[in-house]
Image (cartoon, rainbow, N blue to C red):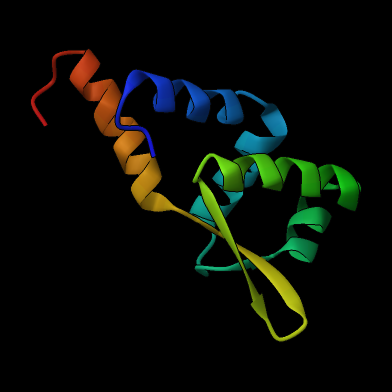
Length: 97
């Protein structure tokens, strides 16, 4: 969660990779709260091991959570973390929030 400069920098580092940004973008635009890792892999057309590596970084940064739904492993974007990051940026710019 981006509440200070250090945590914001860690979050931006994770979002700074195109694949990770694509993952977060896809999850934000999804009509469902949870999206399976298999669906993400098909959509992004990358190997499972590569996707797993990127998801791990996003989970560590607090941007995603993973949960099991039966036999499926699903990802959910943590909108609150994105809101806090946006709030942090707006504060830097002097915007009233």
